[in-house]
Image (tube, rainbow, N blue to C red; front, top):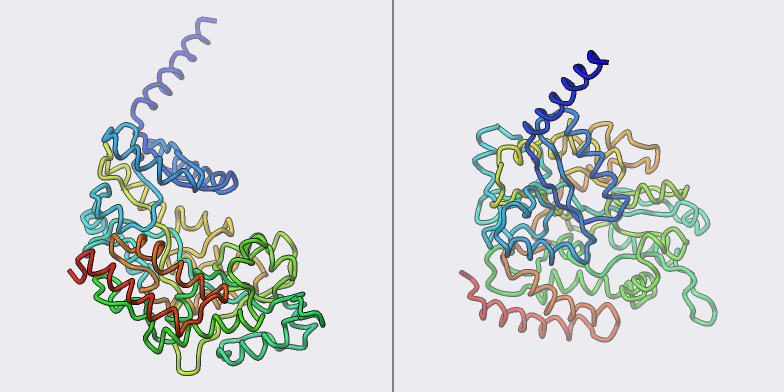
Length: 424
């Protein structure tokens, strides 16, 4: 008995001393219970290889996350402010001084920033410095239902498709009853992705997405792109944005067969595979003489400037964003197209499943990704949410035409920029 007590005491002392030697890094993110379960698996994998660092998850639903984070920052209490946080847009929070400049850590550890997709790391930058690492790249591809294409006698899309090809296919894929009721739309695409068409047509939202002086949505390139998307809706080829939301979103209408195609990121793969859908993906069609213009953007992991142990936070953050660490685990879960090209081109993504078979579409779009789909200045969210989006919603609903709405919209945008001191 005495020997057993002696051994037990030694074990307890070892475990207790180990716990005292551990550093705790608090890790914050939003997400559903399923997403949090994946985050916990990532934390467990890290702790297994880094026993001196304990990862403590702090999670909130999307609707509460940013408000509660702001409350913690306002307290100024480093003991309750998370060390590593999932944030977007990084520029807003970096401008407020609550994020750590990661440049010194990157330089000291030779962290491979060249492994990110073209332009993507800029989404985590402010004033020329890196403040966050995007976890994934939210670029879009064209998902298509092979059964519906076969039924309509339409060839599957490929890299040669233009806007004209998309429109011609949409005419055949759309099913309208004799009473005028649309039984099936060709396309389901969120109105908020309008920037994709503009970028493909070599247009822009502002003349400079970092230090703007004027709105360019009424310029011919942007005007024609918005007219293209609006015409798709007006001709019943594409579901109107409001109707898409009411129907449960693009994933719901694609799975139910209410649309033949959607334009969306990699996050839909796992759900469509679980549903046993007969689908594939292709690059998004571009206009004749246009360019590929996938979105180089994504929410980013950041470090708090309030962190009490920034070296431990950096150890975790850099492991999160490595092909052998968190990137591989997230990719294997089927939830993301990883931010690192090496991970995306590895078996973690390319060999993850037989469906979709054309995963090269993601690689092609990623290699041609562009910045400029969102503003890199602190007032962008206010400008987009309060001025640009409401005006565009009137176009998507059919209540206004691009020719009438866009010049007036640009007048409002220009006034907003001037009031906020742009260009600086």
